[in-house]
Image 1 (cartoon, rainbow, N blue to C red):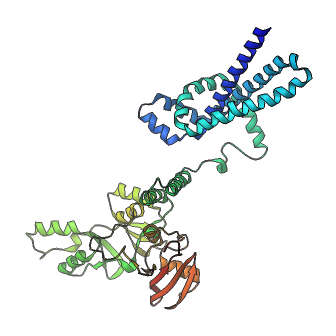
Image 2 (image 1 turned 90 degrees about the vertical axis):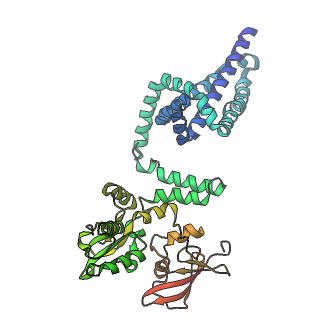
Image 3 (image 1 turned 120 degrees about the vertical axis):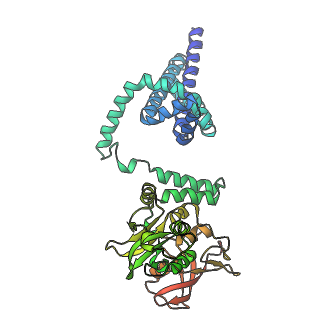
Amino acid sequence: MDMTIFFTLGGIALLMGLSAFFSGSETALTAVSRGKMLQFEKDGSRAAGHVNMLMRRRERMIGALLLGNTFVNILASSLATTVFEGKLGPQAVAVVTVTMTLMILVFAEVLPKTLAIVRTDRVALLVAPSVRAVVAVFGPVVVGVQFLVWKLLGLAGITPKDPAASSMAHDEIRGTVYLRHQEGTVERESRDMITGVLDLSELTVGDVMIHRKNMVTISADRSMIEIVRALVHSPHARIPVWRDQPENIVGVLHTKAIVRAVMANRGSLTGLDVKSLIRPPWFVPETMSLEELLDAFRERHSHFALVVDEYGVILGLVTREDVLDEIFGRIPDETAAVFQSGIHPQADGSYVIDGVTPIRDLNRALDWDLPDEEATTIAGLVIHEARTIPEVGRRFAFYGFQFEILRRQRNQITALRVTPPETDA
């Protein structure tokens, strides 16, 4: 009789160990980083391969672990009741319930799950091969349970393909980057670059293009020396060429084309015809996403495009550098005398900013969080919030910032003073 009790208690201890294994495995395998495991698998880790295989069938894995955990806990409680029922009589149920609840809570739930949280990767890699075997054994039962569960959820209108239940990969990455930045493990520059890549599918050409008012163009009827001067003063190696009127773009002239022609003409501009040097213009709609634009640049082997609206009217131009600036941030020229083009810090903590400065550039350069959904430039934001084109000297307060209009040219705000909140000043 004593030996029977001894073996029963040993069986209960074994079942408690299995319960701890199921609980810890579930926590580790659901909390593990899939990206890290994929990298480990690429580096040759077989255990990471097991983890990734389990993660691809997460529902079946969780179902198998829950099934195993529930089974061993109930069996352990039943054995304990059998052992103590003859000795404690009617009080056995109450004593066993309290005792087993405490033991399961401490040794089979809290302890293994805490270990799995603090050593997630290590525990996941250690238990993955065994969990695969458990999933294989309990697989048929789990499939039946899953079928029943989805039928019940279907009554509430929830389906396996429910968009609300699907994971948004971009949002997950973005949230992780911002969280790591707040914790101090990711630098602001790295955060901006990663989020810049994620924003490419959301931003359009119209958000980053150079407006036609700031475009440098040249008439095809000008002399070659005037055209060369225009290329020298242009910030780009390519310049649009028009005929009759500036909106009638007939081609794009590349600096290299001029250089090759001059070299072929023994260093002289005489006799060169601009018509033979220009290339056909390429037009893109302002609504095209930057991700699509980069793909188009790659396919066409081009770095330069003219932007048009739905009526075919030229709005500006966009280059590959403009897209890259959205990822890496604008790199000021070595001759620039200001903090960043269009941003002039003042001694009192405010900034004098050109009206055409993009809001995204401000947020990147100064780590601000001004909204850019309704306006692209800082002047556009003030006009949108003020619901009017304010006069010089007017002051406004939006989003915790103070805005003062410094200069205005006709209907365009050309300069304004922005004072950030005291915590950012």
